[in-house]
Length: 192
Ligand code: AMP
Image (cartoon, rainbow, N blue to C red; front, top):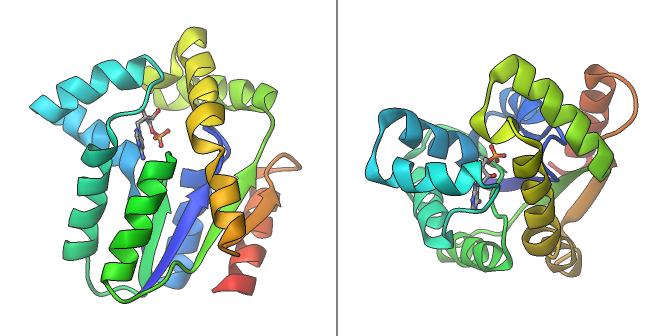
């Protein structure tokens, strides 16, 4: 099995480009944000707890998302591997993922990082709020908190994966969605 990570700040296009990659390479796309939104929509206890944190721009506890990922690895079959989107988001999660993959006798295939600056995070998320109506996209305060959370808790992963020789970055700012997608697919082709 192959294990890829889509990395980047909120609004970088991880989910959008993951769809093209998973189809081309027969990978299962696992988005922890989407799994959490499903729990919220179903009104589960976990969903209720996650809802408050997500609306605040904060992260849900590591063990919650780690459990979700492990469950996906255990149950998703008939594929070439996994494309993780929005996980890991903390160093603790990255280490847990390293351990999960090692326990399966495998190694991480690579991290595809899509980089955009903070001003663009705002623009993109405002635009997405109009189209998708996500609760955590709605207010400026939430977006600001998500950006702060990204810098404080998620950005340190870049060094973790650079040190492991797994980190690959593309510029997510220039041109149309199709042009950005082409850059992401080209990178994927070089590391698959
Ligand atoms: P996303 O759709 O990836 O932007 O995720 C939406 C929200 O879900 C995030 O802002 C977090 O509150 C929560 N979330 C998603 N993935 C994780 C994760 N790996 N760790 C903690 N919280 C997460």
